[in-house]
Amino acid sequence: MKKHMRFAVLVSALALQGCTFFTISDNYGNRYGSFFNFGNQYLYQLATCEAAPGLVAASEANRPRWMQCCMWQHGVPIENSDGCAAPPFFNG
Image 1 (cartoon, rainbow, N blue to C red):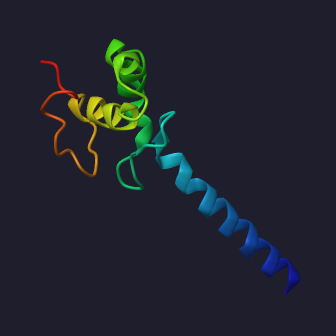
Image 2: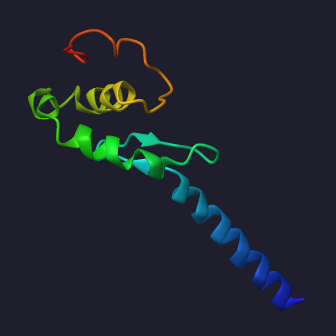
């Protein structure tokens, strides 16, 4: 019985840890991806947005939202894209 309980705890811990393998995050606390939409497919977009000159030019308070909008403009789904298609988050 103890072995079954230990095994169940181990499997539960691995399953909970495994959920973080499906998402990626940036330096500003934003998370991208989900269980059915793996975040690791967005690594190129994350690297592109982190290297964008607009991120450095954005104020410290706007950087998390700027990063979200940059990811959205590169095809990454986000929860709330309102305002991402207008300045200051869009310069095209």
